[in-house]
Image 1 (cartoon, one colour):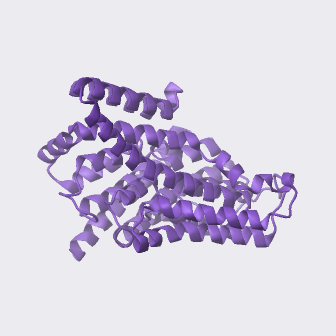
Image 2 (cartoon, rainbow, N blue to C red; image 1 turned 45 degrees about the vertical axis):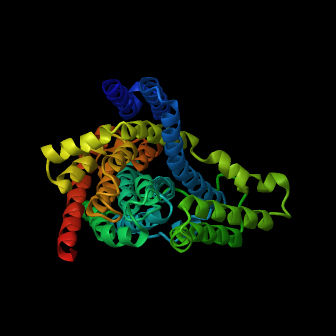
Image 3 (cartoon, rainbow, N blue to C red; image 1 turned 90 degrees about the horizontal axis):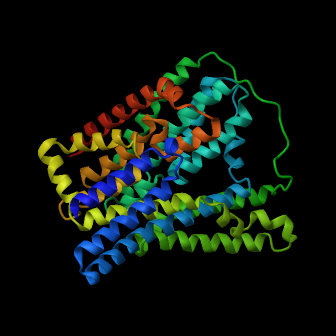
Length: 427
């Protein structure tokens, strides 16, 4: 049974990693993998009561993450529908490319900690199209946006799916992860940013001609500001809600979503249906990326079978015996997350190491949050932000390898070194 489970998981994992060449959506591979793994486990064990109980536990843990992501994605879509991000983006103006690079890098870094790295990448790359006429300039900016978004997501419990998983799973707490990973994350962004800004020094911004808004339905400044600050306020308040009430984060995000829905309906209640249709929560729900959510369900349920059959515990023991050093193991996980998706890697790590042995805010979890979050920047296919940038700006895999991967790798190791140094000094 164990050999069959490992074999099925490896094949499913390979299909997820090779999503682009195979032209098979990774959500399909994850769901087929999860279905096969649970089927093999149920038929081999023969104890339907035990398997049912374990599946129930896994579904409960998975549902918490999925509900949280659905709520967060919907809030971001509502803010976007109201052109709320203009509150930030219209303030980004400069004539020098290098100054613009610094501005964009830091805005992306902090925005991705509040929203998430995928949404921030889409917002910032869309902004670059309005600010830069040359495709070559936009490519460099897209590369830095990917690095900055992944670095920004790593130090916040709501900034990256993997950090959110660790936070909901109880491996990290809000203030501890911010204190531990903020400085390394900044370093992992500033190093590539400084090099790129130096290369672009002296060059002027070549702006495209101004175009009218895409859909003629504009929102008022009051509506934009209200939805932007209310949406961001809800997202930022979720960690505080969890700390005060000790309820799981998905409850806080769903509560916040209800408030946003209520306010939206009150603000637009006097408008004609066709004028307010694209601003409603119902429309936002139809726009969220459901295939990503289905992928998380599939991969988390697939990894759960390896956890229940103790395959991951055995793998952790083997790694400890072979490599020996925890910091090196986590660094390797981070680099591997550039090749394969960091969600299953972190899900597997959560199954490999127990909370009894490695309690909340242990070195292992904090360093894993940093490495899995920022390691994905090394290759364009290594993170959701990179894949989004690839699609939006038609970035070629090998262009990214030639121009950006080296910078991202240097930033990754610089940030890792900073974390290890900081850990030695504080402990």
